[in-house]
Image 1 (cartoon, helix red, strand yellow):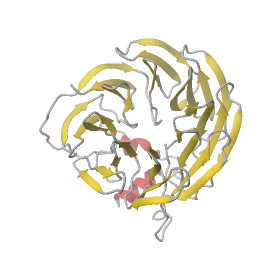
Image 2 (tube, rainbow, N blue to C red):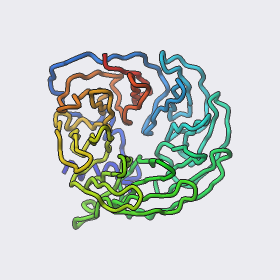
Image 3 (tube, rainbow, N blue to C red):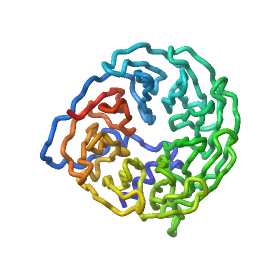
Image 4 (cartoon, rainbow, N blue to C red):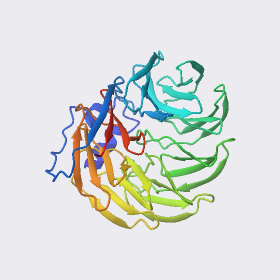
Length: 377
């Protein structure tokens, strides 16, 4: 029943889907379990960058600067060590995705389908309109800006002027989960997961299809039961690329050919990260798992965060970090999954996963718009 309710709230056919009822104050969260605190996490600085509302906004880091966006159209540049504001501009758009970083280019996306590019001084570079809802962070590599719309299209835009280079169209099923998953660009290749359980490899320069493989096959008797969408980012690990599907499985494929290497029955909406031959994954029950990346074998499983609506994990040294819908950041010991520390933010949901700042610090952005730089003592 929990799965069905979750799908109903996130299904793209739900025109007025109450995101707040899932992540906001109206939703009841499970109580936190007592822990034996091993340390007190540090907040090095925090800054108000503007409310995210229902957008999945991620900050970006480049050359000692942090770039953060808000739903009301504010784009800010902060100094990374102290969080001091360098500049703030009004894009005059309601922003729904960002921030993407390239070589002296910052890209954000607007609700109306406009892709907006600025240089690192905040000067506008170009603007390009695509038809569709932009929900995920742009990716910039090798002169190409890649953006994705919620209806299954991926666009390649020229980094210099924003002109369209190519478009890939994937036909989505009649009923699908509202997904904020974007694309991963690696070694001239774009990887994207789609509704219906498919993952596609595209050539970055041309948009041509290298291969298409099934992460999961829809099954069940009703449309709800047959949802098996890839709703999180794929991960690339050495010679394999892997993705997890909601109500589906985790599957790994050969990087160049798309042949299936191994798979494991597991369902995830938030997604996973890979580090040192292990996957760290948040499943659809809000369990955190450590899996062997070569076989999918479970190393450990932490279930004390069930009902907290956790983010995708992030790795900080010897710890696995997740945020939750109550605005709490949890630190799990990487070796065994034990929760050893936690810290509260402003109390609003943490919708997007923690982001790398430097080898000692990471960033957490809340729905209310507070951006925190955190560290392990």
